[in-house]
Length: 91
Image (cartoon, rainbow, N blue to C red; front, side, top):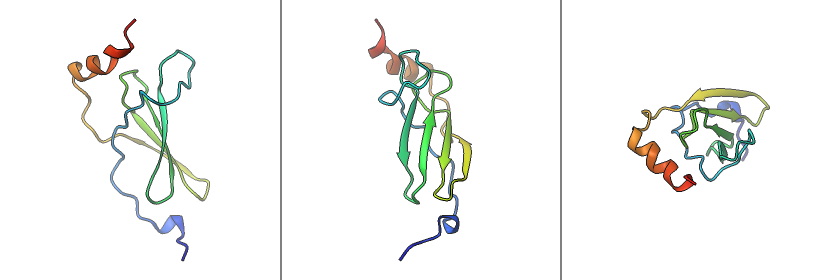
């Protein structure tokens, strides 16, 4: 039985994904994007805009070709969280 992707209800905004093991899409040497799959079948691209290692925006690519952009729903990380996340990449 197949379902129409448009019939799946939208749920809460996605959590802020950790992108440190993802792709470097802007060529600065730091991972800033990661792909995941939503249970409804959407492909999600999580993008880190401020280089703290956590996604700030999520682009949902739907099966019908449409897209939408959402902010993450988590509270911003604390300074300690950001420093601990960046410490392994320190030269």
